[in-house]
Length: 301
Image 1 (cartoon, one colour):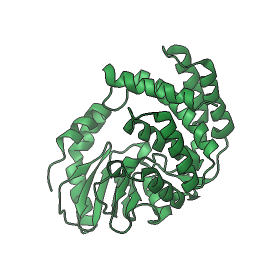
Image 2 (cartoon, helix red, strand yellow):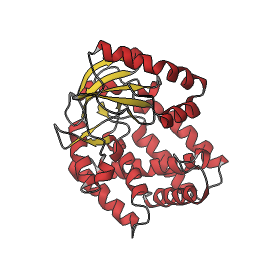
Image 3 (spheres, one colour):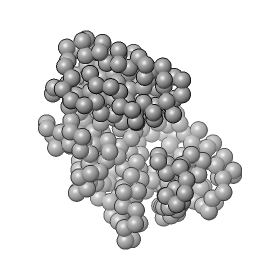
Image 4 (cartoon, rainbow, N blue to C red):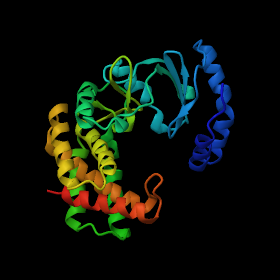
């Protein structure tokens, strides 16, 4: 087995501190034990995402994630879908946050960049199923959402009109507190849709929430906005993509618009407190914050 990628190790320690260092020290042994348990042989380079490594093993892939509550229900969602719209789950070891999964290709839908919204809409319709028991409710986050919006609006230096913040709070009250009993991905964006052999595209890395399917579209549109940044009449382009996704995924476009407005206000505040990914300051962060502000206003009815 190859070494744990240095970039992954560095980012894990930076994010998780001593707990990350301790887990990384154990990770080679964890992988070796799981390979033996599931009778697998490594046949390629170890890949990684933000919170876990993926080890290719023939027609499958061994994924081991850092132990964190945000990763608790990924196998539950994959198990519920049974390969319909998402990669198949073959084995799971919850104590080690590990899964043996159907192998997919590294190409993401973001790199494909053709019919992105159409493909995502078709997949999302497949993923929209009644929720199994035992999954966290997205509605349980509503009180925290409202509290953070009010706190950020009062404390941060931002240009958002009070009416825009109020509209986001209305989304929490109107849509966030009482949501359908539907399994949703929870982090549905083009980087979490991979090309595959069994199907052209399959979803990966779900959070496994119970909630409003329209919520998933907000993450997709936010990622599309960042990817298309600089395009002529970006707002018009995104409105068209919203309508297209809603039609293909069979979701009320007005619910998507309202969730997207809420999400953009959240993002505008989050970026001012924490930055975005690699954009922690400077012109790049300023540009993204301006985009969030513009979309927050544009999505407001």
